[in-house]
Image (cartoon, rainbow, N blue to C red; front, side, top):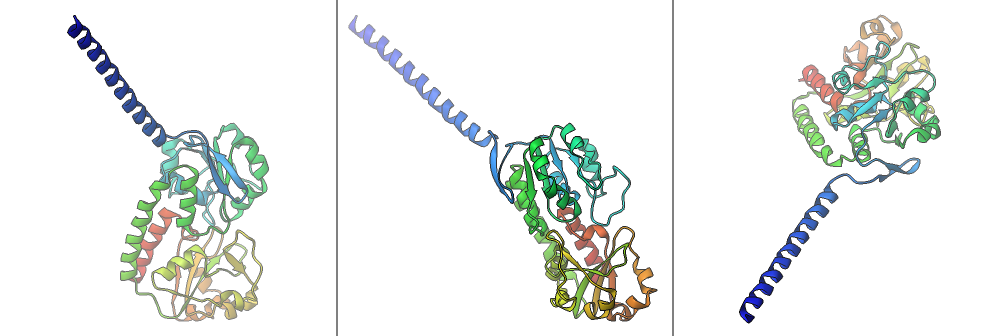
Length: 332
């Protein structure tokens, strides 16, 4: 009798221990899964202070076309996007070719553009996250409307001084909760950059990068802007005295270029190598060659002036890769 009762108690005790062990293991597994899965809002630091953003945003509105491509690279849902890119002509509601297919696949709507941000349209999209800032006119619009935008949904502005695409990508990846996606994209770029640098034979002498505007006012990128930096990385020598020659003209906080008087053109752009970027409404390289003012520049005389598309002006991940292809093809 005693043996039977002891065996029963032993089996019961063992059963309880097994159940407790299973419960403990299940609890550990749940805790691990919960830690890996998105949970509640996250806090991110922005130029406007700390902003609480969704852990896994599903309805993002992006207010600057130069930032939109990053969101598609990170495979996050964009419900609406500003279609404008600096100097790129497009029809109303038409997205840039670089990410138009992604926008169509996701059903992204084009943000109506004008002198002011269309707050009613944005609110109608029921966004759970708004991303703006960066550089250019759309960036300034989002800065001006920040308080109204924040009343619609959590709003994050990419800092104006964040001009390089790698830094912009990291900021946005952190905001949307995908920082782990960045390293592979940057590795892809570094590999392509190294190959381009080993292939490109850059012309000797200083280099300047200008924009051809509809206003015809001479405009040049400062040496620290994204495109000049890219050219420097593949072997071109930038004219570091550009701003001083132009009299150090003032520029807006979000501007990465300077404008100066046509009378100073020969003084400012005396570099032997020149890249010209015709923007929407600006004159082409052939048209500039017919202008005596430009024809007298050293680069035009030596036929060392080259054209790049407007999309190269402020490259994101996709356009920087395309721009490298263009440079290799031209200077190999």
